Length: 358
Image (cartoon, rainbow, N blue to C red; front, top):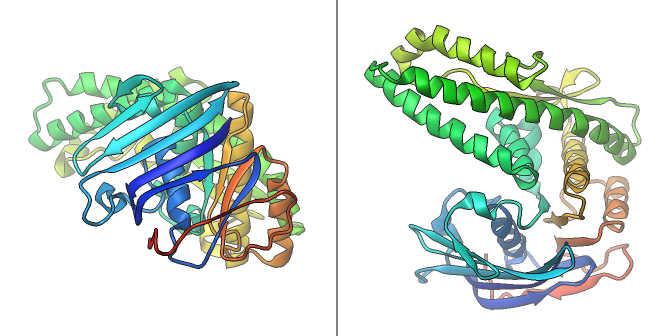
């Protein structure tokens, strides 16, 4: 997969701007507040229909504009393709080649990309929701069924919560069955992904740090020890029934994949409590490199690597090692304030402070 041309219209601080990308490393250089991160954000939005900076769609629309528009031309499986997204505060419209659609589920899997930004420090020290999102965003790009079951799970849970609040259990068993079936698939796939990521991340972390430290990943769930989708499904079916009375007192579902976590440890100690800032940054770098590697194995093509602020607090040794990894990727788009990077054949792109201010 290779990105060729990106157009941003009324997106963040951009009025109407186009960039062309090459194979290898594409460096977007310039001072802060010149719209560098917005370019990566646009590619990520075209990948997932989500921003990695905000949950408010209106923040993506240029001040004073009524809508935003993104257009990406790319090559996938040797075929030239085009993807467009137009959105305002209320709705979005997607077009892939000549096919229009409005469902995000149809967008996922068209573009494959991994993003690494300073905000991802929250992967280590943030709330469990951040780590669940880390897993979900990579799994939805490689597994259409994961998208399907994730949507079904949350839809069923909304219905169950309504009935818990009203204490009207007439059809609650139907929604619990739906949730349990989806939970079986989601949890089993998350555990499978973590087992693969753990091996990759352990090696990446050691290479980045040069330290004799053991990075470990573990899925934290009351159903984590069960070894099949069926067993996980049956466990949740029983648990939803058993907790129904207690949960009706507070009107919400207390158990399931929406409450699980990814535990990260270094030498057996939980990283979010004990890791130094340097260790945290190295963990995130290792996780992101591993995410890219696993995605490549799953889809059989090279995902795009998006890196925001290549300095991002890594010391000189770790930064050089990280850059060495990037030089082997088919296509990388990264931002930096410094144009001088120790990488061969860098395609240098610039943004204009007059064009973009965010």
